[in-house]
Amino acid sequence: MLIGNVGMEPDVRYYEADQAVAQVRLATTERGYTLPNGTQVPEHTDWHNLVFYRNLAKVVEKYVHKGDKLYVEGRIRYRHYDDQRGQRRFVTEILVENMEMLTPPKQQAPGVQAPEPQPAPAPQEPEIDSDNLPF
Image (cartoon, one colour):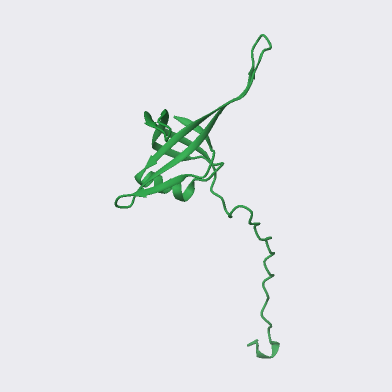
């Protein structure tokens, strides 16, 4: 389980029969603190590669953006590949099985100001013609 902030917009790709895979970089930060002897331990941030599949990837594509706070559960996968120079590269990924979005939904797109609330007009009373009253 991890709780952290999304570091960049998700990279979503589609493959056979409308299946999706999304990749997200998640930053988790351990706050700095002071030891009893006065030694300062600085804040430390780790970056994690998250991989989402199928419907969860489509949810990520639609609702997750840079800066959002996420709670994820999953399993670790280790893999390796050879880069263009022939060097072996190792990758550690979290295959996400469950996700909770912790950032409240946005009401407006970023940079768009909400319109100023306008006071409701006072209800107008209908004019009453005293000549047409039955009493």
